Length: 284
Image 1 (cartoon, rainbow, N blue to C red):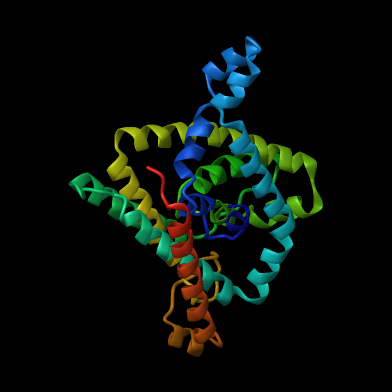
Image 2 (image 1 turned 90 degrees about the vertical axis):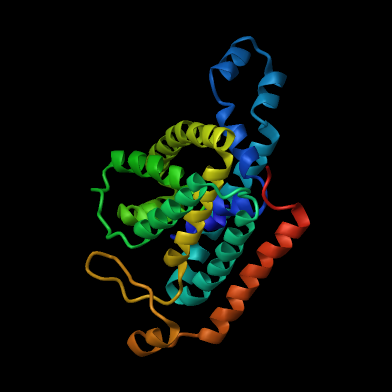
C-alpha cells in the first residue's frame, strides 16, 4: 500500500482490495469512536486494543511507513527514468483487480449498474482534470492530507494523484525525503481527520448497500485505468495529459517500448491472480 500510494495514479486502497484486507481495514479505522474513548477512560487497555484490531493496524502502518520512506526516492526515480514500464506494471495490477471485484458484486441491480458507471466517470474525470495549485502554505499540507487520504482508501482513486492535482505532490515528497517535521505533522493531522470521517461513510455503505457500493468501487478501478494508461501525450500547460495508442505515442512522443510494457502488464495481472488464489482475494 505504501509503494502504491507514492505513485500518482495508483491507490493504496487498490492494494488493500488485492490482498483481501480492505473490509478489515475499514472496520479497524471506524473502531476509533466514543466507545473506544470510554474503554480508555476506564483503563480497559486489552479491550481497547482488541476493539481497534491494534496488532493488525500497527503491522499495516509499519509496513506502509517503511515502504514510503524507503521507496520514495526509488519510485520518484522510476517515474522520471522509466515511466512507461512503471505505469504498465500498475495497469496490469489494476486491470486484474477490477476483474476480481466484478466477481464479488453479486446481483447487478439498476443501482449497482448506475454505481459502476458513476465510478468509471468520476475516476476518469479526475484523471483528465487540469492541475490547480495550492499556495504551499502550512495549512495547505493539512488540506492536502485530508483529501488525499480519502482518495487513498478508495480503490481506483489515487491519493498521490489528488496531490498532483492540488500541486502538492512535489512538496509532500520533498517533506518526506528531508523529514520536514512541521509539514509532515500537518499532513498527518489532515490525513487522520479525513480517515476517521470518510471511513465511517464507507463502512455504512458497505454494510447497508454492499452490492451497489462494491460496483461503484469497481467502477473507480475501471476508470482509473485511464489514469495509469502508459502511453499519453506530454503534459499541457494545465498539467493534463491525454491517452494515446502505442503506435501514436511512437510517432508523437518517442519509443513506446511496447514489448516490455505488455510483458509488465502481464506480470502485474499474474501477480494479482496469484494473490487472489493464495489469500482468497476480497473479503466479504
